Image 1 (cartoon, rainbow, N blue to C red):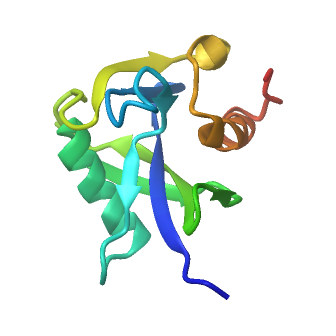
Image 2: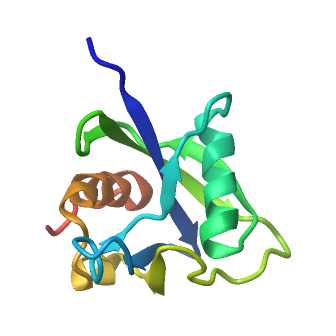
Length: 138
């Protein structure tokens, strides 16, 4: 079995809305939307990696809440795992600092108004199902 590299992403929730981040790089992903996050570094837990990535990419302090059921394949050897997360009290508002040029808070009705990266679609569906209790529309 080959080595898997886990990429963690945040379903950052606030007042029932989900934060989507539009990629600015690399060119083949630019303009598409994703759940923000990144690779786990050696010695990090997924939860610590996610808090670090959100601090670096969005300038926010967050707390992980729970892992979203499932794991989704990315380009080998990467796999995507998603955690729900919330902003810590007093945290700055998210800003697109690295690899993103726009952020958008989406209500459950707006979830499919953005063009998600293909590999994020199943994760977003699962987040919608588990966080709202509603079945996803896409």
